[in-house]
Length: 360
Ligand code: NAI
Ligand code: MG
Image (cartoon, rainbow, N blue to C red; front, side, top):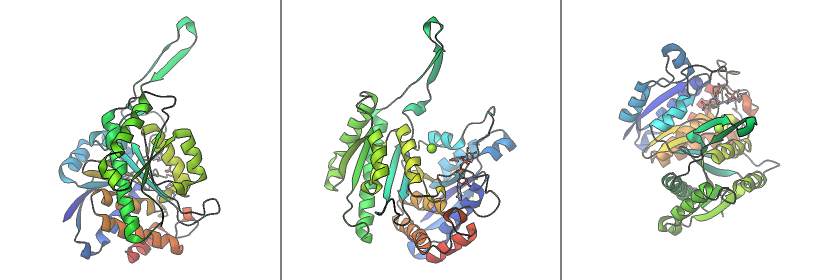
């Protein structure tokens, strides 16, 4: 089977790490029966400066019509308000209905703070909640200053599909643990995060809908445990005992905050991948930005991107290929000889990539 992958490097170190993503796809063993073809696509601030649009229609149309998946590097945001510029990745998520942002967080090695391995996934709803951006500002009566307010919109449809995706991910992770003999004793579990004690209608609907979706026979039969946490205590427990968690599902804003917080538990931003996922399409995207402070020096850590490639492959149902990439990356980190500077090493991007390719 040939998969066609759109490559959107974007700005800054996006241009240094996305080529690594392409190389690892090309280096996958032929025995997997997979072939890849690539199409280079534009988006980002450089594109905006050149053409006046940050996300050309051609990029969106090519992804929709030709591609099975894509890799997105990073984009720089202008430092001063710039007329006509808006973030291309936010627009892409909308235009391709990529309704989930999936962020796995995995520790490299036991640390003094966290002796037990951290291996969890945050599944963030990507389309609604406060991100509908329906805000308004008006004058308070009696001249007592301004008041601003925002709509927090939660729907059954979005809450249900995100919970189902979280359940599917829990089943898949359990299957991988069983087949690799990893993390003995860890059970498939989805933790629903909300604040329904205060926001009984909006978060209440999210909680009830997610619960109902996860109570389906498919998940019950697979042994998926349904857990829930109020979001503030979720933060506390996540930072005390991250090894207790498996899959965490959250509405958009809580998911955004939790996923950056969780990334901090495992060290460098250069390690943490993400995927934007819809039905039948996935864009792998490293969590980091365009890193102007290290751009052009060839020292960006490629691992967040390589893991994002693997994550994209999982959602394209190429789990074996994904597992190969994860193992090769873990091998590089476990040996710890060829690490990039953000990890305390001295290796260049290309040297890290070549070490990982050798391990494939
Ligand atoms: P950043 O993630 O680009 O960098 C933060 C720090 O982490 C920097 O010191 C950087 O050198 C380091 N770092 C990040 N990725 C690394 C890697 N792969 N290897 C080694 N070190 C790495 O965040 P920052 O500096 O806040 O933003 C820079 C630009 O990126 C801004 O224009 C921002 O708007 C944009 N950005 C874009 C994102 C996206 O495209 N999704 C996400 C975050 C920021
Ligand atoms: Mg964020």
